[in-house]
Length: 68
Image 1 (cartoon, rainbow, N blue to C red):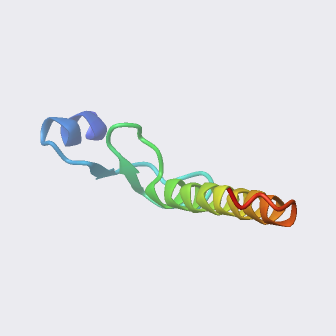
Image 2 (spheres, rainbow, N blue to C red; image 1 turned 120 degrees about the vertical axis):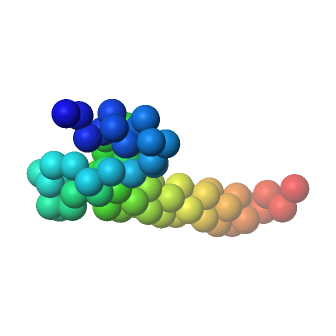
């Protein structure tokens, strides 16, 4: 019996799978089998990196007088 396949057949976006080796969470995305908790954390870290990079670029452009 494959829990992930069963969840997919039922149209579920998430399923309870094996505990994550990083955080111990058991809720996983059906489409990728990735841990929901770790995926959310990774997405937040990526968004912060992008925000910081854009902020730094805007600050640099403003300092150089690039108000265009």
